[in-house]
Image (cartoon, rainbow, N blue to C red; front, side, top):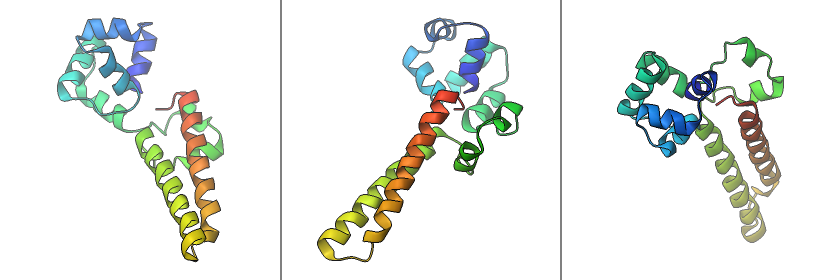
Length: 142
């Protein structure tokens, strides 16, 4: 997220940042979406933005939950992101809830399992996780 913020502050496109840093556009997109960056990529970006690699590493991994901007987010969003540091973690939870809900539902239908009552809650949890991811994308918190 910090990479995107720094890029937007300088009013650069991803293509311009890629050219200046010597990193591919795809790598810039991947880093901006919250994926890990190699040390070499971070060094190149730190040089372009005239900052330390450690600052970029810290900001890429963690959502900054201490800013006034974060405190202005809806309470439901902040609660849903408790313990979540990266977008990929929330997507994993969404998929895990959906898969577990499917297993509970199928188990209840075909094997008369006692898990069937849990399926709606698991599907609902997957829906809430997906909604939180989309809201986070819209608000550019990643």
